[in-house]
Length: 340
Image (cartoon, rainbow, N blue to C red; front, top):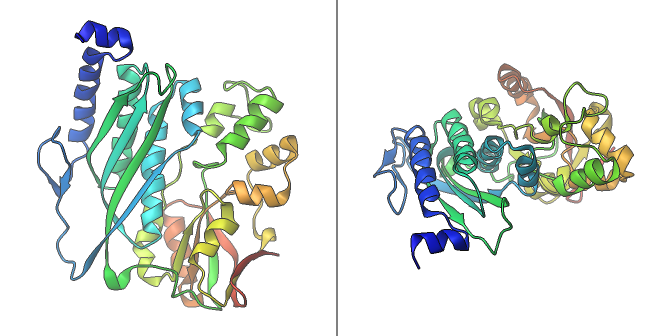
């Protein structure tokens, strides 16, 4: 099959080469002192940073779900790349790990050079913000598997932590204080339900004003998933446990880090969920239990810390310009998350 026949079948090799050149520029701008090897190699390489006695690698793979559909319809492709990085950083931060390297995977059909490059440029921006190497990745045009213009996005992060400093949640104990760090919006979860309510029930367009706000629907839905690295890295040794509030909401994620015989009491009066969540609940006629299971409700990360560390933890978050508040406490009891 010639190049022209391949293009007729749905894969533009010349466009792919142009995209690779743009991606190479993004990779070059997101290398660090730990980067090894050549851009465009078959594998990405990074050194372990010096100074660790018993380094443990912490790895995670994830995507951004159906948020990519909103990005496609809005014609904004770079924000979901940044979402992907920040989500992944938070997932390994829960274990106390420093981000080292990232790999991205973009698959779709009929994507332009600008669209592909936009996604990767967002990934690179997220990596630079964390002094993390964008070690490589893959782009794949797959007509037949994807409809023209559709794409999906996934990434893998590698971090490192001193083995004795790794957080597992086992240090959480009765008497610990739960501290909430505010989300920047939906983050990367609950988009299937949110899209159904906003687009199907309310018949809103992406460029329509979001009721009760000064922004548009697209602005609210494409708000970048917040990273908590700068807010929590300075105080990681003071923390007993962390829960990244993603799919499953507060109950589904906080329970993952609770030891046996510890119950987390969440004070529902300690915060007012942002307007977007109230709008989705009212217009979608969604029960409170389902809202808690699907959305983060304005809470992006929960810190479990001893009483003596609370002031230091909240001060670090405030210095990083992340709103925070006392969300509840840990008590002795059957392992569970309870709202009061």
